[in-house]
Every structure is written in structure tokens, then in C-alpha cells.
Image (tube, rainbow, N blue to C red; front, side, top):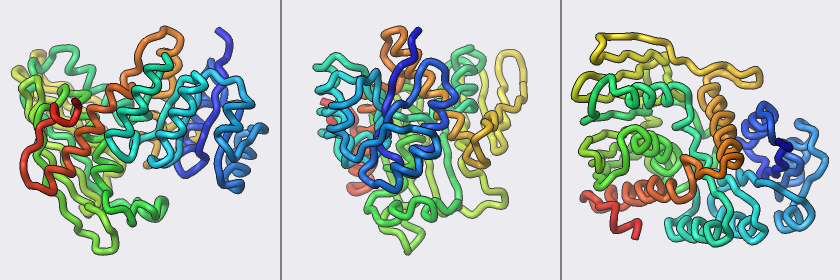
Length: 344
């Protein structure tokens, strides 16, 4: 198969991980990059040897023959960039958060559907190898039918030093981190019918919430608790691990700190180490997330080759995005929110 030609739009904090991922994967290459900041453009271009550089996305699409584009900019720019890609009929990966509003996200999905091009959201947390290991146990039937889950991300890690803009927004932990943890809950237990949310701001130096607890009713009949915190000081810092508890009719799954997976089920109890690999370019503790970047990008290429819809397609991500919006609405009203009204 001929190597696919891709472009990266956005050369900021996280994009370097995506560039490393594309270098690791066979069958695709980033041939051009774009960023409005000439310094960031030069830094990424020089690091990865990309000669074709643009400060304007329209010029990029006009000048390059592309098989896909990877949009790694901030949310306010996503809709115009995705719609621009759709007009050029270029398959698109879009960074999360998908869009500033659910209406924007729906418009982006519609634009790509009408253009007949694939759209995938870079929702990579579910692609972490420990999360995939939990999914594999569920698929095996070892614990029977799940009826309860807890998906937890609690940390005191200073995320603001690397991304200072996170401290300034009125929305923080649900929009930036919780969206990943909610998506994991959907991935493991299915779509959600109702969500109830409570939020807190513990750190007085930030504008948004840094603690969130969400109770979700899944259409499968399971109940889950999704809890996120950047205000929890622990003896051993778990960042950036997601901890999971799932109870089923025939057993339980526990993904504990240190990537320890304990399964008690039909065949007894088994304990395994599901630590993510440390890629040559990765660094602890980020290696868990960095490994998932390669996994989701490989999934994208596989879907392009087979003509199948990505697991985290734009249409699928609308359900995760709607949960984020419902969480904020519920936190404000302190009432449960039905999801079907948001997705109409």
C-alpha cells in the first residue's frame, strides 16, 4: 500500500507526541505542517525534518495533495478547520475537546458526512493498553454482566506549569480531563441515559472546577461513578493513571495504581501487570498517554485502509461531548440531566 500523505495543523504542547507517533507508524508520513506561530512552526519542522511549512491552513490545503489531516489546535478553531478540510474532501482527525459547543460539533459531523470523508476525534485515553486490557476481560465474559463501575482519576499533579491556559478558563477538569474519563466509562459500560454531577474548586488560583464527581445511568442497566480531581495529594502520585473498578454478575475487575490488574471471575483470581510500554521517545509518567497516541493513529490508518468507521468517530464523540455538556448543566442545576434531549 502506498504511504499516505498527511499534514499536521497545530504545533503546540501535545502535537510533538503526535509527530513522534506518525514517525513510528508505517504507511503514513506527515509531509507538511501548519501553525500561526512561526516559532512553533520552526521548532517542530526542524525537530522532525518537515520542510513544507504554512502559517495559513487555507494555503496548506490549496498547495498540498493530502490523504488526511491531523488537527491539533485548540477547540475554538476546530469547526472552521474541519469544515475547510471537508470542502477539500480530506479525511480528518480532530483533537479533543471536539468543539466549543455541541452545536459546533454537530455541524462538523454533518459537514464531513455530506462531503463523504471520515472524521475521527483524537480521544486517545480509551486506547491506553491498561484500558484495552480491561475491555478485553469484559469481552471474554469472565465477570459476566457488569452492573457497577467506578472510573477514577485523582491526582495532585501540576498540570498548569506545562499548560498555563488551563488555569484561566471557567471550565476546567470536566472539559479537559473528565471528557476522557467519561469516554472510558462509555467504552466499558455503554452509552449513558442520565448523568448527575457535583463540582468543586479547591485551588483558589484557578478559574474553573478542579474536582468533579458524576453518577451515570448506562443504557445497559449498569451504574457508574466517574470521579476526577487535580486537588488530591497522595502518598504516591498516580498521574496519569486511570483507576477502574467494575463489578459483574460473575466477578470483578480492579485496575489499581501501578497498572496492576486483578480479575476475580469464573476461573478464580488472576493478577497481571498491564503496564504500558515505554516508547523510545516517551518519558515517564507521560508514557501511558504517549503510547495511546500511537495506538489511536494506527487505528485511524487501519480504518482508512478498510473503509470502516473509527471507534472514536465524530458521530460517536457527540455522545461523549453531550455528556460533558450535560455534566456542566447538571452541576449548575444540581439536578439529573437526560442525554436524549441533548442529542436530538
